[in-house]
Amino acid sequence: MHQICLADRLAGLPMSPLWPLRRWKCELFASADFEQAKSKFSELYKEIHNTIIKIEGEKPFILNGKYEFPEEEKKLTTIPFQLLPSSANMRQLKVELQLEHGADWKITLRVCDHEGQSDVAVGE
Image 1: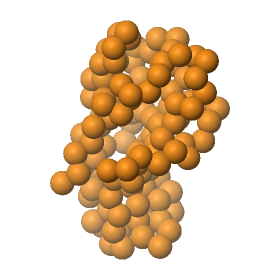
Image 2 (image 1 turned 90 degrees about the horizontal axis):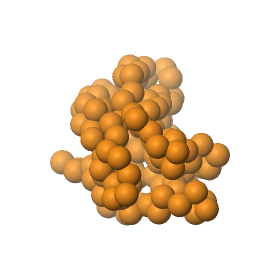
Image 3 (image 1 turned 180 degrees about the vertical axis):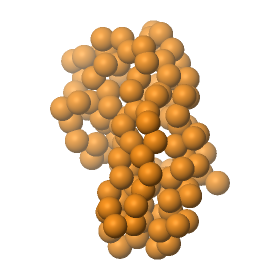
Image 4 (image 1 turned 120 degrees about the vertical axis):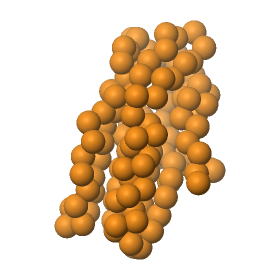
């Protein structure tokens, strides 16, 4: 099982508003089977939802998001998470869990600022 270490990943991001590259993405799961990917998507959502994140120098916050049911006909399902409560520095961050179909069904966790694209890949 792949352990998500979101708090550690976010803790490694500088919180200075002058630092523009607060973004990364991490592939958490891949499968050719939709039902298997759908089940894993739900499992990962439950693991991430209501997670408390503590970052040095910031108040703790909770990841909160509404579950979206994947459908095989839809090639992309995205669940955005809100950071509650969010400080001025953290308000710019966007956390998303995505299930996307390409060659396989892939589940990705993306973190980026509201204006950036999450194109920085994080190794496992």
